[in-house]
Image (cartoon, rainbow, N blue to C red; front, side, top):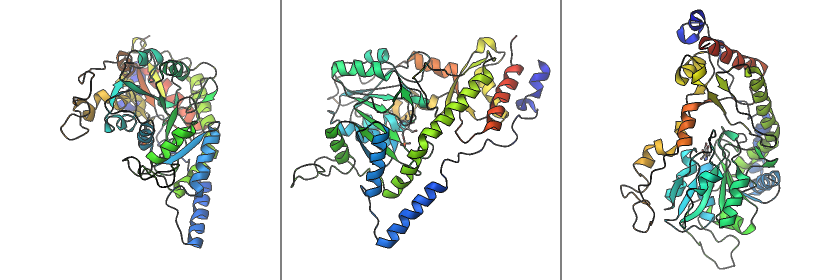
Length: 419
Ligand SMILES: Cc1ncc(COP(=O)(O)O)c(C=O)c1O
């Protein structure tokens, strides 16, 4: 075993991979041609539509079709998609919004920015996602909405969550920023909630250029509200003579972004299949390793694998998770030790209540009737920080990369094998 340890790149050995894993190649010639054709049209007419142009309308219609029918509005980011979705629900200030424990800051910050109180539900055991029991534990008469982030592309138990929420008349926002193309019981995520929000920034499965987002709903009235909230409260769909009906900002997307988004949307199903195929090969290739376990889901629960959460079993290793991850990284494979950047309780803006200057609002407002200092210990979420690391990969990786990943895990596991 000593030899195996010294062979590790961490200890000066030759890494499995001496060239970096290839970057994503998800924007290609098709996007360029579509953008150039659009710009040619702009030149010919001398006009640039600022928003809600033909291309955005087409992108939104295609997006809604993809989700099985409904209404979509393209916005400027995934964060603003959540912000707009919350505004569209017209929630009363100082009510509570329950949200899963792991999310991007942009997935939770819109809550206090609207003077709503985030209530951070625990994760379901063994998952980054929250579940019905964890949500139910936080429901109170003050609850006005639930946000369900589907993290890493893995479907939360959205069927059971919807049942719970419907029985209580609480609206649900699905946050699908990380889960384009993922399915729960065969149905695409984003089509369960009252409203759903997608990020289409460049790192996501499908992208509308460098930044972007989409809000989707099957409810026509909610869609009309979304359109107003994404556009300075303009009286879209309201009777002649109506004026800007609410204070909000301009979160519109551009036609040029929508041109790219349309091409990307067509590529999405194949891209997701490719990610699934890679994970399938990795599961097979690492099945003999006892030190780590890759995620497997029941039939019909199809992750779209934005990243790959991997369970590490310290009792079967002679090292801790951090050392294992450092070794894997030294062999050339990008992994992060844990998903602590996803837990709001570990972030200064949240612990120091930095939303509206030094006021501590919305928590400290006398209008908030709950406990402003309520702690969310979230033991299952913290257990995930201990037990899992994240492997970052993408659909452009080929046979060589898959072989290299399997080789990295075998090499590192052999060196730290406790047997
Ligand atoms: C779960 C989740 N919600 C919201 C966002 C915010 O999206 P954006 O970066 O497009 O603002 C992200 C971004 O990664 C996310 O992962």
